[in-house]
Length: 373
Length: 205
Image (cartoon, rainbow over all chains, first blue to last red; front, top):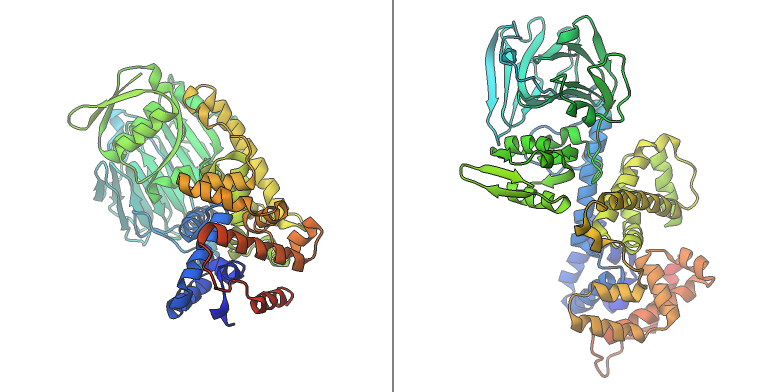
């Protein structure tokens, strides 16, 4: 094709040139970049065509289009990782993924199962080690505002969220694989039915044969929850040792840590009733904003709130940013927020929340934040 | 485009994962412009497009045979946007701060393009340039670039031949270029019949 006779209007109507303008097709982009470089006399006409094309299509250009498509790829990747478990694990910092590559590997990973488990340990004296009769010889700790990824001796991978501690049993990987957790962690458990993997927390144990999941057991939280994405896990509640609960994919179990605390029941509205009164089973939460799964958003460095009460939000922010937040008002704690934050600082987060529902905050010394009405 | 996107649809039904990204590529501009025009909200539209596509993926085994993928997607998007806006307005009732972002009055294609320009100078220049186009030309430009239709679809929609559609759009582009981008340079031949003929031939290949 002899493009040297082309004027702006001819370029605009060329499909391959349109693909180049929007960054839709790598081959077209490479071709036109090279062609324009090789034909400098046509540079101006091509530029005119590009700007006219963008003008007419409602200001869509390559920068804008590719940014949107990358975001879509990311959302799709995460979405499919959940359905065909292939969760990228290497970096706690967000990694730009490749959807196509994921597609290739996704199918082969079908044997793997994914589960997420959230725990919140009740702030009783038993929370430290009293409940865990096992001997531990290996401990990993992440401070507030810090995250760690590492591998266990059996090949299972762990990503530890901020302010968490994990203890690995002394005889880990001999007959069983047992760990205890305070805080939150995301597990990619190597498949080995012969050596069951058990996570102990103060209020429940989770037994898995081979799965990907996430455990949250912060002593300060009000709820204990286990969320399962794929596969199955067996839950043993400490106060009902005889009863084993099997979770189905896309379900989570929520256990209030204080019976007199009615916030737990509020948090699980719409949850189907179960026969045991003090726990509820409900579905997992997808972000309204981008359809990603709220329960694992922290592994992608994203802070997500879905109809969360401000005191819950504050607890999350304290760990995330290594700050303390105090309330001068009881009512403001009840405000609910839905939001997604991608790599924002604490001031940006609070300012954005303020726009949604008015409250005041001030930053005192020592990273102390005081929230009032 | 129609046959291509129907093919992509079938691939999606059969669980080919690349088909999802392909659908995004094929329909992004049309869906975005439709949503933005409907709601005035770019971010919301983009979020809803992601949601409907991911839902299609989840339901791929149950998807109907669709003759017009584009209209199917537009309908999905409209429903999704309406549901979101309803939820948003429920939320807004408790919050007067956001009331000014309520959906705006719908503007015409030309008005919308002018609104998108940043400076007053550009706005004026574009208004004048668009005034030089006939109603028919503006209509076809909108179908071609804003709705991102192909010539088959435009021809069917306007009850004209593909060649006529192409000629009208080509002439409109030349007029717009002359009035908006380039100051006319005396003596240059911007109209090249050979190329026009060539492009028309290509159209029917």
